[in-house]
Image (cartoon, rainbow, N blue to C red; front, top):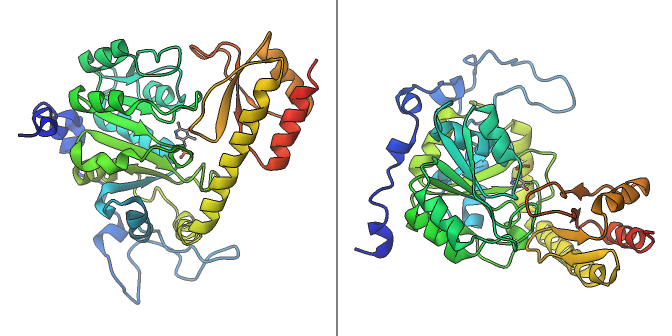
Length: 358
Ligand SMILES: *Cc1c(COP(=O)(O)O)cnc(C)c1O
């Protein structure tokens, strides 16, 4: 028996899913019950005449977004049954909490400083939050890994590359957590397209407790579309589909996503340009007197520690019409602002403004 299979004796998806969700019958939509081509579609109370507005959207969309998943699967090296699509990855975060955590009883585990939506999803669902800190360099310490392995939380969110710090979490630590944690391990890879490391989707076959989140909101440039992805075992994906709102991804979104997938060269060109912009800022920011530290980044933003007063810098930039994210009140992030890499012109404006700060 290999080390990886022996360590999963304790992982059991069925026992992790809330009993009411295991037992419930999902909503069966008209489009679920009839798949295929019919001439006369009078099953769903749609408007057969057409649509107001410039385009036709009079039919309900495919609840399982089969065409988008068929386009996405080869790109991601997974099968369509391993893909969940949601109204942003924020929807997947919420559904994962609801799938596993009984309100008023169970908890999630997060590693501050990290993405704020995990807490919001827990609070919205009346689910507890356990916190174990990242180290001063925003990594998984041995103590924190040990704390995760000892935790009874139903799921742990590992954001890698992490928001707002920008760094990848060490793969050794993530692997230890995957082998030893009793609950689901959610690796949020919203920024993976800007990182050198391979996605954890390449390890899905090894870890039945692994869920990988990605999004069209960052490198694909489609934040306004609201389309997020979760990759996991077919069994887990089935549960997410069971509890999602039936038509959670609109027809407009599905059509647009298909077009975006065919425009992969543009994605690649933007990705490269953003990486060049990151390098450009990374080279120039440390020369500024007000910059104490530019943290390494595997994402499309830089966390920067300013002296003596980050909030004064933030306000100064606002006065110049430049809005960045003040992260100074986040654990371990005292004195920091998070700067998103923009167009070359925006990066130049940001740098010039910071050079003129007095
Ligand atoms: C931006 C971001 C997301 C993306 O959320 P969407 O709902 O897909 O727009 C997810 N996780 C993290 C850590 C992010 O920074």
